[in-house]
Image (cartoon, rainbow, N blue to C red):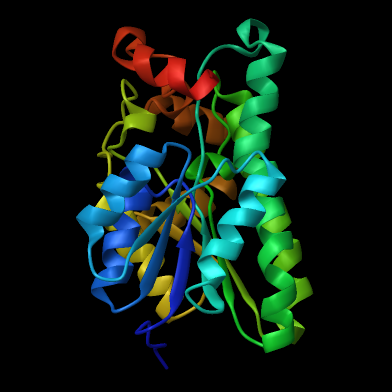
Length: 273
């Protein structure tokens, strides 16, 4: 049975742009009360105006537990949090040997630790209430590691492992945990990155539609586009040598090597700051 989202309180991190903003719009269209979190207060406020309805905005630095806790409390002012979408994420790209320790720490703090922190902050009330849904935005790179994004891949692999454990841990309390695994998405995060041969960059609205569908009908693992899941599991059944050859044939192993660094310069600056 599909769950209604009318009057549900949905808190979304990193919702000022890209997937987060598209997701906020989609939830609002379903009648949800959307709480938009973003590091930039101007971006968050503008996003809430764009989403309209009962959307509200709050600044949140997901790497700061106190800031995240204040965001959660602000969301609870609208009512019990029914859905938390851990969407905030960054993808600085470089060979590992060129990646600074500061960049490594930031990728892990934003992409992984924040997911854990957000879960810790909302799960107790969900457990007590016997309902709730935590949706973590992972990545296809959380199942398929790609060169030049080793730490990013590691963070998304870890999100998948954490989410699988939390699904088992929270299921007895009737709290759902889901992961969304997009391929290359046409957002600022993937500026200068090309999709593999035969694939196209998906639109943020497609990812948002998948997120809302999962909120209505919970399932653990959702790939965007949906057919990419079958491709991954089919290739993963092959011997590694064959799998590597197939990945090379479609350019998957070069996806994060052959990037337009000039086009990414502004994003990289913000992601590392």
